Image (tube, rainbow, N blue to C red):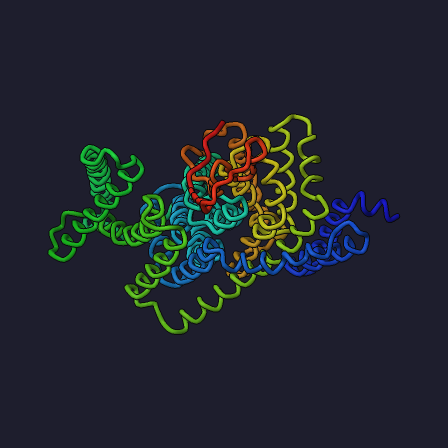
Length: 563
């Protein structure tokens, strides 16, 4: 029996963790208790040394000193403030008026606003609750199918999982040892593509089942001109002019500064163009020039504040002005400014936001500490080698590995949320993916899209619970569950497309977070060269120096030259 335990400690330990989790025991304590129990058992069996547990305090202090994780409370606080600042309500009302004449117009508005809120809040709960309170009664009032209405709200809220500044991407970058900024840049296009796929599904429904997604009646569209026209032509002219100005400014910026990267030039040009459009709308309103229609003016005043916040958070990160942590701090400050402008900031609001932020941050920290305890013991019993041999022996090579890993994440997402999946499984499969030559930025974005389904899975999807808490009584829980199924399938299709077409995620010129340090110690004719991981001693090949000179220490952070 003892020999069996020693030979199979890793699979037994992993199986015990699964039992702990399925029993409903809190995840953080299940991880820590499981790790400590098998650590003590391993010491008793002679498989581990007691000194291994001395590494735990350093690992815990390392977690607390991790600056990257500071972005989590910043972005959480920002999302909670924005949820109550009135921004989501104004966006949904204005964009709903804009798309109102179309079949499924309110659903399109929900998807568009969900993507915009995702790029500002990064918190699923804030997006789902805001849109559920504001848009769901409107959609039901005008005859939308309950399943379509609830499904599109829940799915649009989960876009906060993949569109930066997503909390999932922060955790994923930390667990894979990669740059958060690089992860954000790589995830931007898949997030927009997923948004387009949601809109495409509504378009198909509007053609096949038009009664399920009716247009808003004329009396519900109040942003019309005095003559009864929609005023959309004025908005189109303003949009075309802003896009043209952005294109021209980008060319001028790139021509005047050849060292400026194309992405940075586009961000600066877009910022200047949008600011100019806002200035034109402001002058038009103050001086009553009548150049813009009501809908054009309202769209500008409603869209520019969140776009400014997006630049403050993501733009500064992409152009290299701020780190993700600093961007999160500026985003939290910007959210407070928006709340003040809307006269919604109060002491009660701040207290609620700080309490919720503290709870979520402590939840993340405890899970991370528990996973660190589990990971230390699991590696001590060669669990990482067991996982590596298990996954690399799969048929199909890299494709087989990706398919099995994604099926595993998809299945466990029925029972675990994304934090638990990221802290338990990603440290196990990440090193295997790297050894198989898979880019970890690409791999992290792929898993983030997959883990997005954890919020939509019936019966334990958190987005479904959030929506249930604010949905009216006439909406059944079964309506919410069935409404989520098509969007879960769309997310699965997106995962399949990323695996089939890897170039959907751009991973060019990414930053390696692993610091490479070369330490050279020159001691006369002898030299010892300590590279990044290996040490090559040359003293045995040469006679010892008889000089009395003190050794010269040459510290260099340059990457060692490849031999």
